[in-house]
Length: 252
Image (cartoon, rainbow, N blue to C red; front, side, top):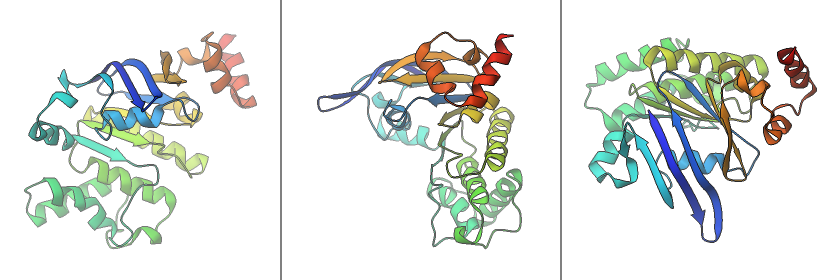
């Protein structure tokens, strides 16, 4: 579990996060949503240790990350998996080399063991026989699945996804959402997703945290979000005519 306790983050005089408290539980897909500039990306970067909170605590199973020694922080980092918005695959490396990269960095496995793990992860994300292809030779959806395979190759306890459906068509986005949720439940990971995709919210949002102007404005699940009276949430969620109709159905 990851717990945020009154987390603040400022850059000079600019206050970006203003007292965020929340809990992200294992085995559940937790989504962070909000308008551009609400603080989502900054919060995610604080959670993975790229930024240090100005005030407050980020607890990994009751361990305050910023208070740990460098060795202890490194231990937690080996428990983190990250799926980046643009996949962040190395163009000069094959699919196999990209997925093996974290194992080269953080494991003591033999090369044969690493390759076994790479192939296992590729099979788990429904990608086989692409080991020796380069990222430019596969589709955007396949690149996302390679990114997921790399994110889970170290068998992480925590999985972070930054806009996993960015640039994907709706059908491929659904495939990625379903895969992330399936892996989350299968491996009991604590999964945190930063997203603008309302289809993700309505399909896999076990827990939804809505940020507004740096504050936690609302929290709940994908069912509760349809019936909330919070004006900022409803304005954000039901911007599209389709979701307005879905909301009417939920209120019937």
